[in-house]
Length: 573
Image (cartoon, rainbow, N blue to C red; front, side, top):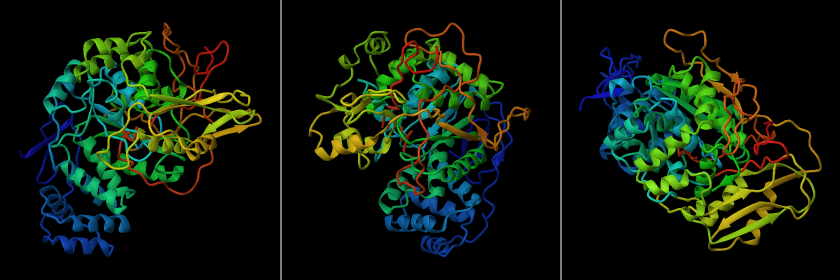
């Protein structure tokens, strides 16, 4: 097979040159990156030495390396040596673009029916705690008319994976063939699946080697891993949720912004309309942490019991995707469409249809989506629950998501290396609202666990995760800090294009409420207000996989939002 389809263009594997014949009725330019095709081919040791000594790899050099990785003709130690050389010396924009393209072309690139032109969208998160956004966003996008071939990952270290969450649902299969994916998209509009054997095989080799050679946090390698997989989906538009903060890969905004810019450029270089949102990841998203518990929270959100921080991300990311795909005039209109899809119950029906299409029995899917389901008659429930109480009077203003996730990881909610099983029942629920005074002895956290029991040290660390103050009148800033979409321009319409560093839209009142969706969408632009507070931003950088799902998507609990006369999210009704 010598040609590979992108959404709207055709690539020749041999050169990467743009071919004028459109595949899906659209044309994106993919630049000819192989400008050194006639250069003399170097051996693998020579390529390693060239990069180690600070040299710039030509397009043909990178192609030679990637072909050796894909074919298995390179030794493992040589692969590790090249990754370390890249980690030490970095790559410029052209090298990174070529690496990404060659990784994408190392395997199958999906092709879609022409009538789906302009409809194929996806998102990627660099990973966080409680990040169940995909479980709500994918069906909401499908309800808005998109096709969402979401290829997700598993959790590693303290972050949870979308696939692990979905596998807590009995019968849900994340393994689907390319033909099955096409059928599900045709019938439902969205699917959430794992990476197939034929999709970007070079990434599987490099990913595993990065993990054991301490080269995980190389920006070019992160970029290549994320964007090559999304490019192989042949997308129209891609939005990236790049997180920063205590529980994120990057602790500071500047580091996250650098990664976001590289990802946006690499995506646009492959012909995808690509944008990025920079969002805080200090605490947790939502109220529940852990695979099965996060499925419960996602279902409750789809039924109308929305928490504002989760909905802020869903509406912001979804609205930007609809705008980039040309399905909304601007981000605000896109956000309102996503909001309506959730509030009306249309997204819930898409989620139910997706469950059935991916192996869940009709009865189980119907029961999970019913209003008054006992979730733990279907989902596995941990054998033990332990409630921790506040040690003094005070106002909860913060919870350290990293500390919480690390303890749950040790209890079995996560894995330390690829292939390890996870316990879907392990997790935690936040029981207290942020910003409202609690008294000493008030339960604030419920931990779901099996064996072994929590150690005194783990209990101490969980208590340390809660921050109480004597009083607070601080405002609640949104999770979304800004978006980077400067490289994106809609065909024939540049006036509405987002700015290169747009601040988050002003929050609107929450009108979602349990089982009681509003008759009309809110007039003001979403996202919703987020009941979180500003946190200190350490300058050091964490080390975990930014390209391990969402997408690195542990579990949620930014705090309860109660209050008399208010929606559970705490915003005015």
